[in-house]
Image 1 (tube, rainbow, N blue to C red):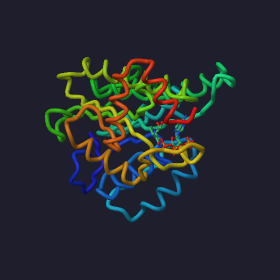
Image 2 (image 1 turned 90 degrees about the horizontal axis):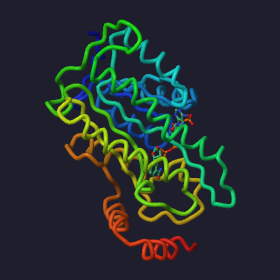
Image 3 (image 1 turned 45 degrees about the vertical axis):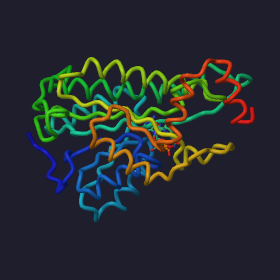
Image 4 (image 1 turned 30 degrees about the vertical axis):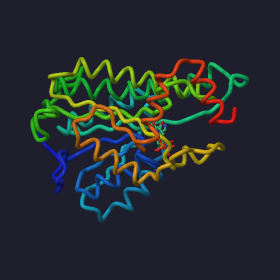
Amino acid sequence: MKTNRGNTTLPWKSAWITGAGRGIGAELSRLLCRHGVTVYGSARSTEQLAQLQQELASSAGTFIPVPIDIGDLDSLQQQFNLWDQQGLMPELVVLNAGTHDAFSASDFSAQRCKALLDINLQGTINCLDPVLYRYLHGVDQNQDSIAEPLTARQGPSASRGHIAVVASVAGYRGLPTAAAYGAGKAALINLCEALRFDLQGSGVKLQLINPGFVRTPLTEQNDFPMPALMEADEAARRILKGLLSQRFEIVFPRRFVYLLKLFRLLPYSCYFSLVKRITGG
Ligand SMILES: NC(=O)c1ccc[n+]([C@@H]2O[C@H](COP(=O)([O-])OP(=O)(O)OC[C@H]3O[C@@H](n4cnc5c(N)ncnc54)[C@H](OP(=O)(O)O)[C@@H]3O)[C@@H](O)[C@H]2O)c1
């Protein structure tokens, strides 16, 4: 089986990061590349991926643009077929691509909800499908393949592959103007919790990443105060630290997220009035 020879001290020689063109995904790509990992970076924007490739040309690892729309299952299958033919399968997969579209009840539309859920929820599921299949079975569903299940380089807890899904603390409870965004992220959290049970003992390590506010092009459009806003490079460092741990859920900034976790315990009357007061709604 052909693998990419990176000079890395990290547990993975290669990683696939979706949403790598900017924001959190770009920072994580930079960090992993600096550590010698071969990073396959996906996004729709080929220019942003090409820029990152140029920027990382002299880093210890390699950044390889893999332009793809995660909403397009056929393109994803094609990409995986290509990796199968090359005997490649990234050892770490970070499903980070996502977007936001804030709207209130007065602008509620099935189309806007669908557009958001097609990327944040279905797009992530589209990526999980071929990854899980290959990590667990080692071959493509539809055709003969030379790929085999990954074998130990990462210790017993991730001997067949490592998957991390980026959801959000917005998935913990409903928040103003985030009905569609929150619903998609809540679904991702539930999906990962369920898969965590199913994957136990399989050798596939699954982690859930729930960030608080991180300064990225996505949050630049927010016109409300963002408590405990974290820089994207710091978020990437927290993600890497979390990926190296055995924790199921990776959260940051910790104090802010733990407060939101406490909010989950509040009865609705307290929760609604508290969030209304905080957001000035
Ligand atoms: N920033 C925060 O405060 C925050 C907090 C909690 C959770 N998150 C989550 O963290 C993830 C990254 O957020 P971010 O703030 O870094 O966002 P960002 O700066 O907008 O970057 C999003 C990345 O995802 C890619 N993407 C979007 N739709 C895609 C599609 N259909 N197919 C492939 N790639 C796609 C974008 O590239 P193209 O548009 O070129 O495709 C871009 O590279 C998202 O899942 C977001 O929900 C962010």
